Length: 137
Image (cartoon, helix red, strand yellow):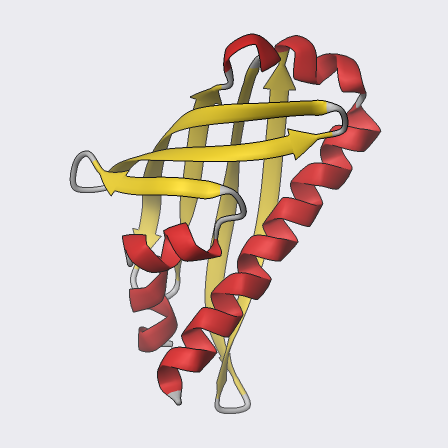
């Protein structure tokens, strides 16, 4: 669990795991700036997010939240509560994601937005799992 916790706090790993992430830089003790490019339906946007880690309970979990602007595409904000538990000698990572969008993105419809948000979260945590597993070899 300590290995997974350390990875959840490693900006290089977070950047590598985040789909479309171009940069992920610390701006303070628990604050970061992330830049990413994503495509949601017909809308491709470049976002600049302010990211914050809160509710930290090492090595059991935290909340990661962010809000960003995507220019003409609109804005996006969301959060994920992440928890780590031991199960049969392995670490189980569970997460719950909530996302909201506005502007042109909001016109695409809630079903599409929710689907893309879930896909991006699933892709992030799958990438994260692979990166952490590769580091343990």
